[in-house]
Image 1 (cartoon, rainbow, N blue to C red):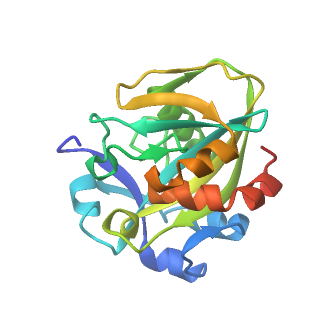
Image 2 (tube, one colour):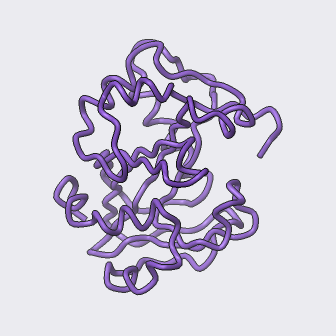
Length: 208
């Protein structure tokens, strides 16, 4: 990670106000309204956030779906989060960093969604058309990585599999069926396992 990288966080206490949970939470609207309220989120140095469980770093976690298949890849050695290297994932995205047009007051959800699109485009090139819906939040306090992160799970429903990788950290990229992914479950990072286990409900929230 860059020594001076700034990342978007919310206080753990804010999440607790909406009802603390472990795993996936599908009642996203009232939670997002609180998390995206003006002045709630802020940027702090990532080196500080990684070691302070009083903050939750907001992470976009985008599942790209097409004709019943989900994009999957293995995190290579150049992955930003070294603790996840070698794990299979079904989520594209990452930390939200400051940009010129991101205001933390006013319509913050819109600026967040723009940031998510930029984050995805840094890792892959999506040449297909798609729709985007936030389907869940993901929280896992059972390990050191999860304790300081909060995922916002997006479902991007693509009209074709026209996706190319940009980042070297993305390896073995392919669209896979849920059955194929289940066979690889033990090789997956925790968030990917949780999403895979909740796939039916995620699909009801936003058809795969």
